[in-house]
Image (cartoon, rainbow, N blue to C red; front, side):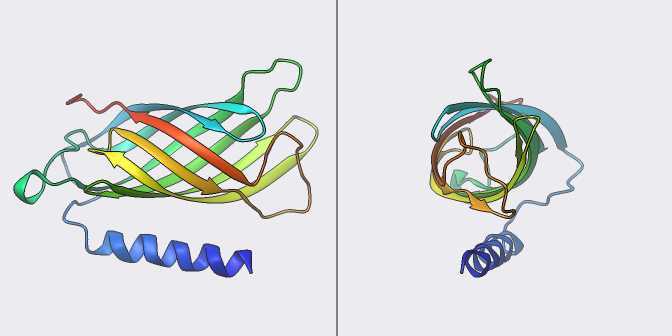
Length: 161
């Protein structure tokens, strides 16, 4: 059931991107940082590097229509129960509606817990994102601090910000 939902979400995300006016490999693209917090069973921080147009506000009539990949890591702030999660994300924002899909490998250095996380929410010019997501497990191994539901606040810091 979860795999079907993930496949449908991926199809919708990438089919929407196919109609995007922005080009992923435009010559004006560059790397820029992104930071964030996500609330699960624990509070996780996030540091990522995005690739895309540094000018996130554009399109017709000043609308936002962007797609960009991100690579980074999530981490807990608890030194006694440290969990890190290297991740690869793809985000699409159209006006104020944003979607993101993450592939995350959470680890506590004893167990690896692979998850696919589709997220949807509100984005302000693709700079400030507030998303709800669900961590879909891909393996049978579980880490206690990683829950199914999550709420994320992300700030992308393009060069025009």
